[in-house]
Length: 83
Image (cartoon, rainbow, N blue to C red):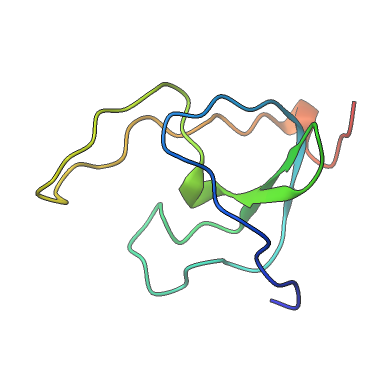
């Protein structure tokens, strides 16, 4: 990656995406599907990797064994689209 991370967002924070693209894998050593190459464009600006985005709020798992919850669907109609 060539971009520097500019911040973090607390868990279960609601944000809106207006499209996604396929690019470099953010976490290549993660197991599938968390080693995904999808990046979502945040409607208010910036990008977030697939591994950091969930479709519904999740509950913190102190054991680290949870799967992170349902991933956001990546519909072909939204690929590369910024609304």
